[in-house]
Image 1 (spheres, rainbow, N blue to C red):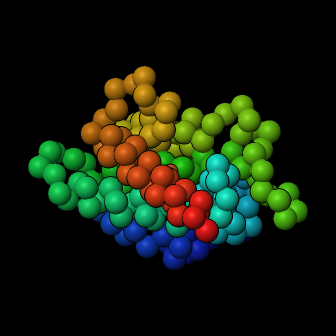
Image 2 (cartoon, rainbow, N blue to C red):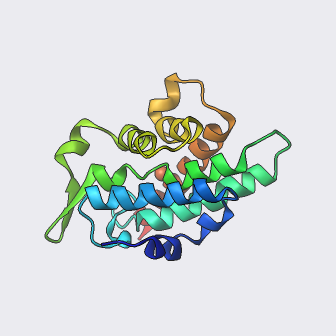
Length: 175
Ligand SMILES: [Fe+2]
């Protein structure tokens, strides 16, 4: 069983969310997704199965949270930092449902073959009472959002996510 303390310790960037209720809900979603996905440790969930040695979902999530915060701080637009950070910290949470660990193997789950992580993550966030602005960031962060009008916060998460994805892929292909 993964505790709130486990999540807080693994993701110190949670502290950047000023609204305590929102921060608690972000933790709720992490715990529920890990539980439903059958994970016994938070660092078992991989970043991606799209390339080898991608590292963990937590590492990717933390890098994206750092990137989005720095982008927002560098901009003059009115950006909701709490929604932005909550969205960044939850954007890939659906991967805890899209992937599963069977023995030593990590593979795409039956559910994951039908529902990609942006959709499953946004649905779970809505179910647990996260604001629609945060669910929107999760739902639209990847290609699903290409046909939608992304919010400012979603535009930032979308691009920062791909920056991290592409840089990590480069790195892993050189190894
Ligand atoms: Fe991502």
